[in-house]
Amino acid sequence: MLFSSVLASLHLAAATLAPGESLRAPPFVARRLAEGVYAVMGDTGRGSEGRPNAGFIVTREGVVVIEALASPRQGEALLRTIRGVTRQPVRWLVLTHHHPDHTFGAIVFRRAGAKVIAHPDRQMLASEGGEDALVADWVRVMGLDAMRGFEFADTPDRPVTTSDSLLLGGRTIVISHPGAGHSAGDLIVWLPKERVLFAGDLLIEDGVTMVVDGSARDLERGLAKIDSLQPRVAVPGHGAIPARPGDLVARTRAYITGLESNMRAAIEKGVPMRRALASLPPADESRPVSLNSRRRRNAARVYVEEERDYMGLEDSTR
Ligand SMILES: [Zn+2]
Image (cartoon, rainbow, N blue to C red):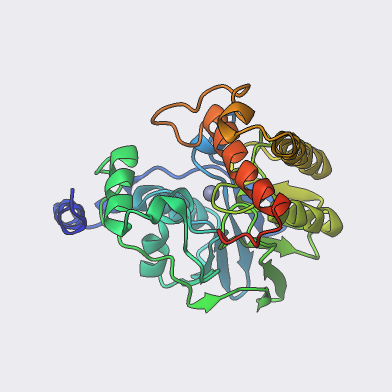
């Protein structure tokens, strides 16, 4: 489907809604992490395939939302969840990166008056076929109904490329770029007083963070950054909040450094990529972020990274 026809059908679908009907999506459950700080848990136990986690911070001068979720319908459900806690206006939407499952609900928050804080680099593998193909693919994943009213809304009003402190209603919210571990446009959100971290997809409940749009080296740097913050609570991009944040960081690090040394050893022995990957289960067709797919796709990415490093080449893919 062409972009224009995808968008046309999304608008057509939106036009058939009765006023207020779009807010029918039932709210999610908000979990209080600290005074005025909430996590909205997505699907747990499904790794990167489930609905991501989100969050919001209530201040005297408005609400800061973290993540927009995967579709306008999910965005509306998140907004309703926030409305169940506070009537404060939503001032800011922070996006931890630009993958569709975290951003395709953003238009809902823009329409509610929020400005967007994000990294300006929106580059990702899935968008290489163009935005039309990305939307068409996503409509197939989410269904036309969930995508009614969709527009791209993830370009930042307030871009963050290093670090930025948002001071709002007596709260301090530090938004920083921990390197391009999971994607070029990664951000993490840190509340220094409450010691709560929203880690985006740097952390996934099963420890297998995807580096296909980023790099293993940067992921390691990002994990070191998280360790240095010593969070009391770390909300991963997907899945359950770990009892001890350091355990999930350690598990993620063990996975990625293990993969690096395996691929490095293969390269040093002259083993071609195909054989270096032979011990891994095949990627699941049509499930690009299943555990098997993540492990295999990461291995291919890290092989290339290590090969370039071994040959003393600059990594031109970054
Ligand atoms: Zn992601």
